[in-house]
Length: 234
Image 1: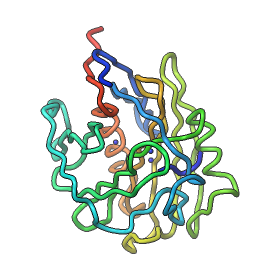
Image 2: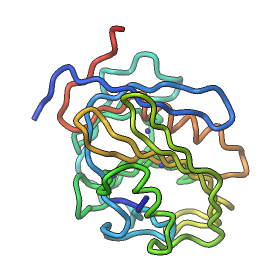
Image 3: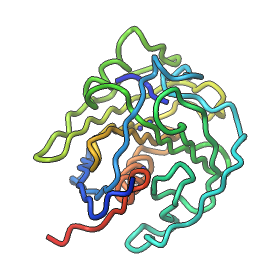
């Protein structure tokens, strides 16, 4: 592995812990190493009706590769070294496309074969995760039809800085008609002091646990661009 919608050298040994609290289940901890900065929806080209960057369809030519960091991932997931320089866990066999951003790395989309589930990674331009989500929820950012905020949680805890938003929307521009979409969007500070966002999308009709696992797993293997990440020996 979800403020404003954003377009989301080598530092050895940087380690940070991301807190991914499942809103209805037990808290989880996800390690992260490399950080980046995220851009807001108001600055992003191609913002979708949801306020998050849209994807005009497959146009990606760069090819990443499965990472060597595949241990301890749930069945069906792989740690993926993205051409944008970061590492993230994604379901095996998902396709990748990108949208150019005016801020930071390209917005990266991973999709299930049927297009009914999606994982999005981008940089955030606002000064904090909380400010970024507040901008996204403001009238300055257009929302999709039927937009309903479910929860907004400040995840700040010790050295970790983050915010998580959960919401529903009836449809997303350019995406399949699967009924109501459930989205869980986390924005956080990573090891180099920059901000990223990871968002998971899927049908609300089949429950929300699969999107929460998608986000939690993506965050657990996330390592920002061009940084060497490790594990906390403590």
